[in-house]
Image 1: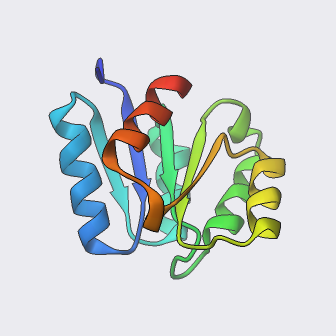
Image 2: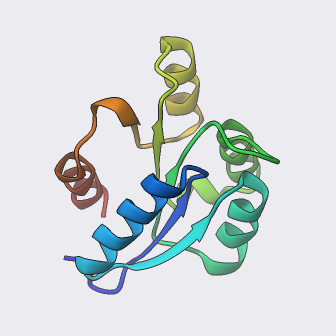
Length: 123
């Protein structure tokens, strides 16, 4: 499925980061990881991933700030972002989608298969 596509996972919860990275590696994706928004944004600029899985609640720079910086630099037009978070309020969802996120998935409600379907739809 992966065809050597590169996914950047920006997530500070170690168990989720490990599960996602291992699951997508098994499906043929190249995985890059960051545990804070600042490092994640540096990887976005340097690595040019094919897709980003982005948590919103992150140390150093939060996920919304990452989206804002990506939008400012025109990166959201080139790199699709799936927000994966426990922030479930409608205002945050709306803001992220307006900024350019392609999907908004609540961690508590998702399965790996849901995530895989979302990625297949986007890539």
